[in-house]
Each structure stands twice: as structure tokens, then as C-alpha cells.
Length: 438
Image (tube, rainbow, N blue to C red):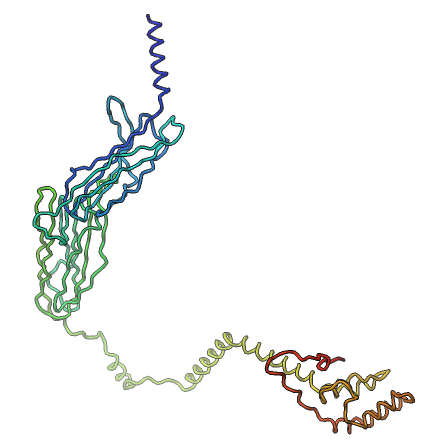
């Protein structure tokens, strides 16, 4: 019998180990399914398994038309529940839902994905859809904004604490509003009103959430601060502050009030300087005048001019220098391409051994606009060339005659401006007429 008992126990353990792990989710609305406009209700979501989780569950994004839904925080409550005779382990998440319309809200089903231990793949489970009835608080008109909270605290702090001030002093008033069960973004702005005779300067409000010390948001806090600067003497009173709110604890409309702040401002004494500059200068014999040396003034102006010139040169000098060099290069290129420069090379070419006529042809081309001497109307030059290079010509005779004829030849053929290019900007049909060669 003992052996049979051990065998049965082993079989039961094997069946339990062989069972697939399960994923279970359940959702419910804390506080019931009926709320008022502006109230915040908590949607509780439990994600459970019969083994353990290998990672954080993937929670869905909840969107409810007519309500403001805040995603759950990073902090989750760990659970161990006994459901249907089985032990379940998991985590609990809270979705704060702030209703904004007096309608019936449909909260859709939520599908959660997680991977329990010993599971071959991630599992998914879906909650049941829920419904939330929303109505207006008693005594509140449609469209009227009202703060809904379970408890409310309203305090103020005034600095300086003294109520006797002078013109020119400033008084700072800070009002702190704390609401339990209401999100911080839903807290109303505290009305810090202006007072005649005082200049009002509002500071940026401080808004933060209130938690229970374990990461769960339980309410909100808002601090509004204003500074009042006294412009005129007299008796003043900062107005009382009143906040209307709906209490979810006793389902009633309540009002919390801060008392007014009275104080008195007196005229400040006239300002008297510690010493008089005019009296001191007069006692020194200067009669309120300040004398400067002309030499030092001139030196200062020269230094200022030099400094200005240096700054201008540092910023514009490289550009001006580059433009001047570019102008010099273009001027040199125009000079080298001129007929006068080619004429200056003619005696040099004729003095070579053997003599060259390249510079002469180049000068004739630039001064007459033609490369061919046969088209020239200078009969003397043509006669000299035929005498030197004809059938019976003698080059030596040509060289001597050309040297003797250079002055008259230069005088007869003054340079002419080349024809302007066509307006269409196309290149000439015969580029040989514009070729220059040495």
C-alpha cells in the first residue's frame, strides 16, 4: 500500500508539472459604477498567472471618449490571490479616469499580453467591458466647472509678515490648494486680483501630483503666487480667496475661503544722498566742471581712429586686397593683349638670328584686325615683303629695309578698336580670324 501511495503522489506531481501555465486578467471600477462630472475613478486591472512572469506584462492603451485617462505608473502592486480554489500570483495596475461629460461611458475590454514561466510563447487574456454612469453634481449647472475631490485644503502665506510697509516695498502672497482624489491638472486657478494703488506681478504657478509615498497618486497640489508693489501710501486689503468644490465624501457642494489680508503703507522719507558731488566739486574750485587735457584727448581720438581702422581692415581688408590683385591681373592681361605690346616685340624679333616676323604679324593683326597681309592696303609693306620673299628676293635686304621703315610703318597703322561682339553672345563663324599666336 505504501508503494501504491508513492506512485499516486508521483503521478499527481507529474500531471501538475505537465499542465500549461495560465494567464488571467480581471478589471473593476473602484467606488462603484456611478460618478459625477469632474470626479476621478480608478480602474483596477489585475494581471495573474499560476506560475510566475518572465517579464513585465504589456498593458494596452486605454481611451475613453468623454473622459481623461491617465496611464498607470511604473509602480505595480504585487498580488497573491486565491481564486476558485487555486493560487494566483501577479500585479495590480490602476488607470485613473477623470470624467468630463454627463453621459454613460463605455470602457472597452482590455487585452494584456504576458509570458508566464514555463510557457512556450507569450499568452494573451482579455477583460470584460465595463460601463460607467456619469451625472451632474447637485446644484451645478450644465457647463459650469467645479472641482470634485474627497478632501480639500486651502492655505496662504504672506511675506513679509509685518503689516506696516512703505511706498516702494513689495508684498508676496502665496496660495496653496491641495485636493485629494483630483488630478493636479484639474485644479482651478486661484484668482489673485489686482488692487488699486498696487502693482500686481503674477508668478508661474507650481503644479504637482500628491502620492502616498509608494508611487500611487492620491491627489494634486497647485501653488499660485503674486507680488504686490506699493505705489501710493494708504490702507489696503488683499481680497479674500474662495474655492467652490464638490465633496465625494458626503455628496455635497462645499466652499472653502481664505480671509482677506489688510495692511497699511506709509509714505517713505525723501531720499538724501550720503554726500553731494556738486558741493564737493565747488569746494575744490572746479564749479561743477570737468577739464580734460587736449593732448590726452587728441591721443585718445587717434587711438580710437587706429582701432577702428584696424577693425575695418581685419573685416574688409582681405576682400579689398583680393579685388586689387584681380584688377592688376586684368590690367596686365589687357596690356599683353594690346597692339602696342606686340609692336614693342617687333625690334626684338628682328634682332634674332635668324630674324623673326612673328611680332610684326601679331602687331598687324591687333592693329588692323586681319591676319593676312595680302588684304592690307599698305603698298609699301607689301612691296618690302615681296622684295624679301619673292622669287628674286633677298632676306638680308628685307631686314635692313624693315628696320628703316619701322617708324613710318607704326605711324601709318594706328591701332583700331576691335569690333564689339554680337549681342547674342555666339562665337564667330571663322575662329581663325581671332586666333593669336606667337
